[in-house]
Image 1 (cartoon, rainbow, N blue to C red):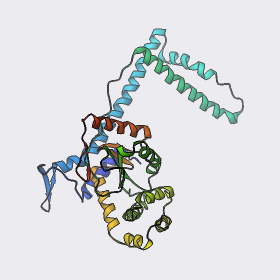
Image 2: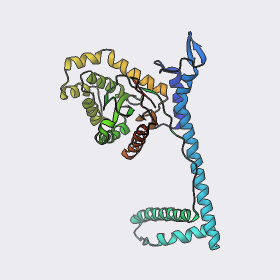
Image 3: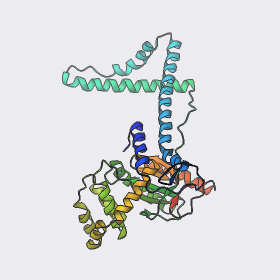
Image 4: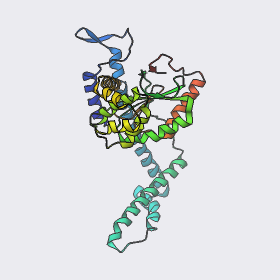
Length: 339
């Protein structure tokens, strides 16, 4: 679930100021920008916290630039084609599109008139798109601007739940929320990846319960307790199957259904371990500047929001090729993923 860039930047600023309770490993020689109670705030910490927000600003700049560029391309294509016909742009476009609209028979029944109007608009839009595509091919239009590359970051994984071999050449770290619809939609895609890549991909799950989801944090804590009994992935799947209609009474019901030890599960939920584990993941997600779920890091490369199977495969295959060519060396240090 994505926020607007403006809201996200404000939220990130608040997170940087209020969280950062568990700072990530950073360069020891980084210049100190401030001290609080004798504890330093380094330039490296600030740069890391701002890396994703600054990337999102670059992406917004690219989107605005590309939108305006596409508009100018269309304007010039139509003006060029209209001039060749000795017509105004409006007359040229009307002539090109009218035949498609004329094919829609008139409708005398007022009740059906709105449906006809919708069809006319759809056909006019399609006709204009096809006209622009043809003119673009004929004019040999080329576009040379590209979106900025997403950043590559060092992501701690620790002892978070994972499937796949620790020696896999590609590690995907997912920050997710059990009440997030897009995270639930991602589940079948990730299952397909597990079947397709087997020993080549490792998936690490990390918690990022969003404040707008009241059951996200207790669900994450319950999943941590299932993890302690070796049943995280079964519990993970059961939570998403129940979501978004999660309620406090569900957690023990799911634990019993999956054969967890009820006494151990109850004691775990009442203890501090699951809360500390979720707070750690949440603090690190905020320290990275994350703004929504799901967020993926593929060998450290950032991808925000729901990703299709095709998109994830493209990134995974690129990483496998790079590792095979020796251009990428997976980080062998325990507890981190980077390139």
